[in-house]
Image (cartoon, rainbow, N blue to C red; front, side):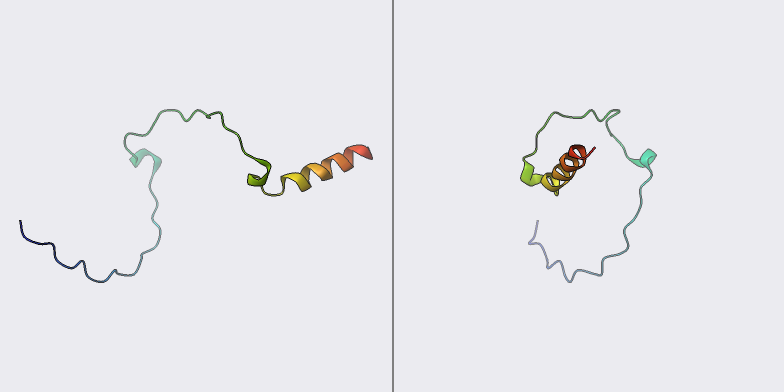
Length: 60
């Protein structure tokens, strides 16, 4: 086998396509949730949102 040639310029990216769910092969039959955790810093606005709820409960 000889050397590989230059790949050339990359063309313009086309529009995003769509795929019908039925057209996807070998997909799982179920997508069960997996136990996991997140730190407060990974949840955008968590502290502020919880603070607002606590404030609302205090005045309820």
